[in-house]
View 1 (cartoon, rainbow, N blue to C red):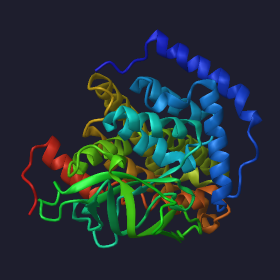
View 2: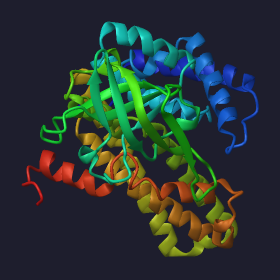
View 3: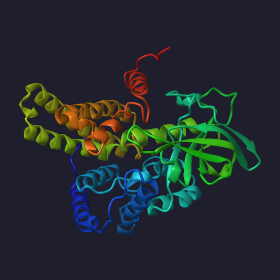
Amino acid sequence: MDLTYTEEEEVFRARLREWLELSLPKLPARPDPLDWPGRRAYDTTWQRMLYDAGYADVHWDASPTQRLIFLEETERAGAPYVGANFVGLLHAGPTIAAEGTAGQRERWLPPVLRGDEIWCQGFSEPDAGSDLASLRTKAVRDGDAYVVTGSKIWTSHAEVADWCELLVRTDPDAPRHRGISWLAMPMDTPGVTVRPLRTLAGSAEFAEVFLDEVRVPVANRVGEENDGWRVTMVTLSFERGTAFVGEVVACRRTLGELAAAARANGTWDDPVLRRRLGRLGADFCALWRLIQWNVSESQQTGGVPGIGGSVFKLRYSHARQELYEAAAEVLGPDAFDLDRQWAADRLSSLSYTIAAGTSQIQRNIVAERILGLPKGR
């Protein structure tokens, strides 16, 4: 595959860099990381700036390569990440763009692009663990609505969200992968209760969500009834295939800062540490090439990332953890100071082998769908 950029793509990169240089100084001060309403306002302000400049739809209407360039350049410039708008822009939005009706795309995509509405992800359940297909939240058809009862956990940004991409069981008698539907649920619907969950770092970007006979219009179903597992695989292909692009750029930058800190405090003299940092440099370089490969493949297959995203997600999750373990070695006692960004990022890195599909699940996908090995028992 051709992993080089065309002249047109390099022009896009240059224009974006120029716009970022002019626009970033106009942003207000960043809010306290624990102030999620403030973070929502900050993140949606940035999204509106992107919308007004014509960059908001890069996640959907641009080519996969332009999307890659956008994420690379905004991260390098220190621009805000999508933050509270993460699920809408990188999960639900692309899924609706790929699987939704014309009316659904017209209703839900523009508000996400403008930063007017925030989405959360209602997939995981307390009793399902990594086995997403064993979800129990049920949706019973009642006229032109589904009556939904159950609960979700680790629901990203639920406390500030307007909508939820929700997986429900619409046919309890069907094989478990075939009785699931994908719904868009308004978070202000009667019967929805949100209970924030605190992380090790004290933040609350996740929540439990309890659903007590919540009525969701049938018109809010994306895809056919009981076809939600296939629609979900589209969502997860975006989540595992391209959603972490900016983070790889950030990790490469952090690695450079870590090497500089090691030289400054003398830990660079340890040859074992130097080899460790060198291997991490090679890992992130290879991961960047894998991203380019996946994007190139996506560009040839209609814009939806393939199962190569699982290979990327598996290795990236562990490389990120190894990066911050190395950071702890360089920082010494300061590694326990949560006021240092590296320390907070280290705690965050612990979740990456679980979030967006555990490493065990990714290994199963790679084994069965890429290597052709038999299913585990």
